[in-house]
Image (cartoon, rainbow, N blue to C red; front, side, top):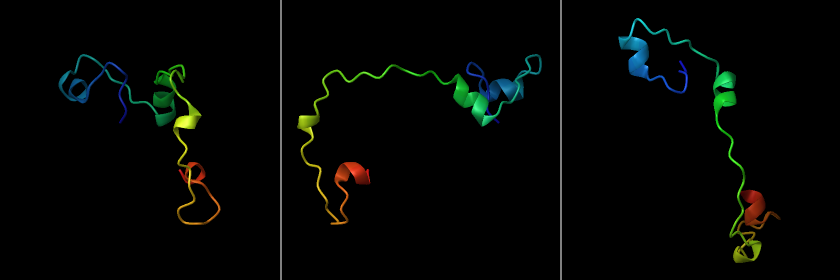
Length: 64
């Protein structure tokens, strides 16, 4: 069972006066905050070690 953001498992079992409605995974995911991407300080040239260790034609970046 997934609980609303400010509810706890203890709330749902010990507090009879407060109803906690279960929600679907999709509803829970929709409630997750989405942050703004910040690439400050990222420089691709700092990551020069993209190699093909297993020789399958894919670099480390592609494998990950």
